[in-house]
Image (cartoon, rainbow, N blue to C red; front, side):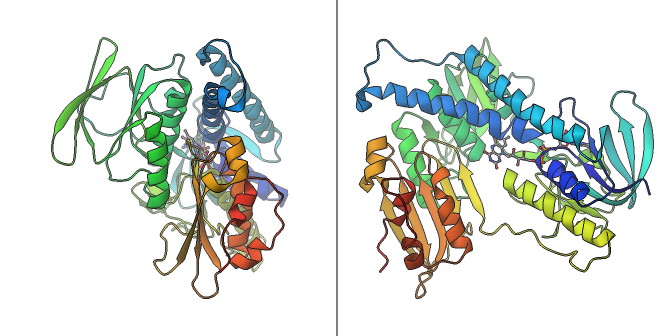
Length: 459
Ligand SMILES: Cc1cc2nc3c(=O)[nH]c(=O)nc-3n(C[C@H](O)[C@H](O)[C@H](O)COP(=O)(O)OP(=O)(O)OC[C@H]3O[C@@H](n4cnc5c(N)ncnc54)[C@H](O)[C@@H]3O)c2cc1C
């Protein structure tokens, strides 16, 4: 055997898995095929998007500076070149940290492509030399991530459309951006570019935005964002795309079958992501997939006992904390199996589930995605929070869902600027199965936004 564990992919999931395994003395190699190490979150996902969103939010506040008794001579606007310089600098700092971890780790870092040749071996093709060799593994962990899905819309191919990574590297502010897709990335990017000063239209196929969040929250978000001028088109199908002389023309059809042609300077596709599994020869490794995503159980194990998987290439939500926790747990299970320990089937603990969108206003949902109809719902409007009023963050709401009788907090949903950051205590409360009364008895400093989560009647 060449390695006790071979990890495929050096992003959030793969790096967490390799570090955890080597920390336990497992002889490990990590294979990554990218030209630029770092992973999606750092290079083209969470960190660059939040950098642009930070500027968009600050610009919003500056436009309203009169509300805070600040006089401003002239008009505030974004300097896209400086913003891109800031993004590139920050991403490079985060990347250096990850690359140091990958290069200085106690595992062998192999740069190149891997694919399975059978259930216990894979072929590694070195990136620089192109030479290949077969590596035998005790266990393998697939963490190869995902890439943007490009829908099959007539006329789209060959046009200079954007996917999220192009939007994040935009050199100029679009005059008018059409976003196809009203999911998390679509809504984040729509609010970001609207905040930076672009006109934005969102084409959403279904009746609601952000279909994995409770409707009351996504509706409130849509209303607030529409007040600022984002044009949301619901139940709208994008039928065809035409590009000429720097203008996109998108033909759309509404629920009644009416067609309309929309023009815009830029077009962003935010229509989901597909797993990077095509080139892995998963059949050879006897690893089953559904729609290309790897099927893995809670321990990380796939249909092959010796192959585990974690992160975006696995069926389920594509978010970083899930990728990291699943990668770490899979590595612990593999270590336990290698050393003959009995605790080799421990499931990753992702309870409660958290979904968040860094839009304006932000959204967070904690707990099961479908709300049990028997749960009691309590709502608090942030317009009644003193701190929210002082900060100008009153456009939002908090909701708690309680089990009838015991009043145990089962789920919570928040809409409002900064709500993702000030909801972590609710995550703990749900995990600890606290009743509302127990949660309300926890000291919360006044006046804070976290305190707003305690403005619920216990009765
Ligand atoms: C615009 C955007 C914003 C986002 N914002 C957030 C956010 O705010 N919060 C959040 O939780 N999540 C966010 N996400 C999602 C998050 O970035 C991903 O869930 C996470 O980065 C996935 O990590 P991963 O390890 O599965 O994959 P990756 O980080 O993509 O790592 C996969 C690695 O495997 C390598 N690889 C691929 N194929 C092979 C092969 N055959 N052989 C060897 N190596 C291979 C790739 O080169 C890559 O380095 C965002 C995503 C996007 C696109």
